[in-house]
Image (cartoon, rainbow, N blue to C red; front, side, top):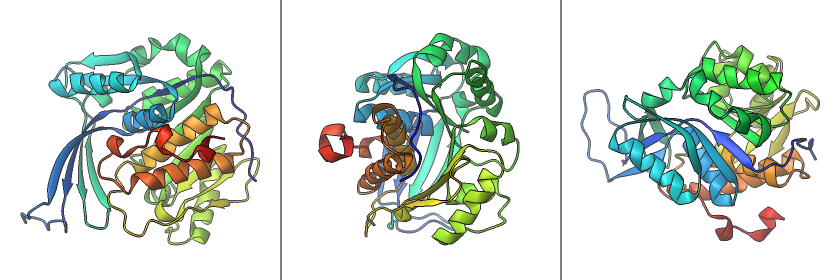
Length: 322
């Protein structure tokens, strides 16, 4: 069921945005000008690219991170965290700016509200990426992109990979969402992945996603913009996807978690897991790879935090990896 992902099963996965995550847990969100009591506060490592990288690494992938940190204590801590998990950090560049930060408020029902300050992520330039030229062109199976770094740098890498006829799978996570200036990137991606709200923005809010049927309509709109394969993640409903070659939408269902604790970083867990399965289970259909990634992402919402909620391979059912 679904097309197979035809990509070379090499070992490296490269990613690109990182930062510190400031988490506050509260019963309700404050109104403008209002101060409320929170229940708990914690610091975690994050940034979409970093989360996706750690999610894949914890499953056993061989990962490399390309990005920028500041010269502050946070930047040092982030590199140490990567190295603790075995991520190759040789292409992380230190810049004389603040490290990126995400402020996340989490309510009792597990919903999250995020403000992201790019910091050093916004300084990633073409010359920073060119340090990893040989790695990208010759040793990489999957490259994951996010929009937390400059779009022109993202487009530069995608063009480089396309011009070299690289067989690596180029996954673009269109988050945070932009209402314009992304068309070339979308067309260069092998897989374009967004959640419901992001998908609505990329289709100019023509259709609100409030059902599987409406998600399928938005999916078709995104395909018509030139992307090869589109995935829309739908939280507790799983995901829908379609491709240029197989435009009929397919729905990947997941078991619903009745009382999610924290949905922060679940989408990143999905993408990191998907990258892992594309590299390590190339004979599976894309449907099955997405399904397995959804199962792992669903497990993360039962715990607080971002990267620390991501499971290790030995904590998951063996049949996920067979």
